Length: 421
Image (cartoon, rainbow, N blue to C red; front, side, top):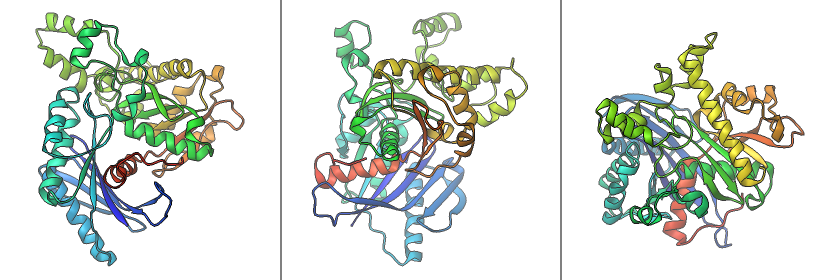
């Protein structure tokens, strides 16, 4: 048995899962994996919320001061050790996998972490300012607490999208300049999209290599991906996670000339405009109220002319627009897969996105859609009408399992594990 601790770190949060891998099957590259513990530490700071879910046990909730990601890692390990003692089973961590959002040109596969890797990831923070710093903080914390004898692996969101062909990945700017500075479509949320695709393939009981899928990761950050035969062929996020769909605080697609216009008219620096587009735009910027979808739905109820209603209309329209584009890219699709916090929990938003798409055979069953609210990680629920030409699923993405699998193969296999999905 090997125990892999998967850490999915955000700017002020840390999600984790301990996955136990059974290596007993003799066939190469075959194993089974099961979750022993999972949990999270949210709102790192003076009033952090700590949650631990031991497999098959009651959920443990606590609050307290957790000032830094290093303290969050210590707190996480303390919770795991205490719970394992109560279970009567020692918890041995054999390896740790870390989600890293931006891998740049340098990292196109998972990599064992050393000092040079940490420096390189830190250098890429300018392209993912809301994400890479949190990953670095969690890596530093885990190395400080666990020591250098435990192998650690960086698993990159951008790696899944390395298969995007040049016609989709290349921006129409001077090619020499683009290549000099590594400017092209990297794509993000790759770990989540890979998870959604695998879960859907298992649900329809067909090999992933035979499916054309459009996966929608809708949360505070949002992205759409066209997947052909298990390979990403286009995705909505680009050089940074700012491009594409309307998000919680990010603008998504925007005429680049807007940046220069704001610099000239508002007297802002380029850095200030970028912060504005990343942190004060999207649902928050349009509504003027919140980035929280639930609050916006409440605010827009009975007020079709409100800013909240406009924000919701823009959000759903942009997703629907990308679905149409990716149907063209793929030449049709076998399924649409909703994931992420909004995609999993909001039946209203799913219905609004799919409204009027009978032309392509996408028809939701209202009862199924309404019933699909709490989906366990790794599970999928069909929400399309029976017999509809295009099926639609809600899937509980499991990024931590994908991170753990990639870590296992990087540390002990030395090559990608072939998995049937």
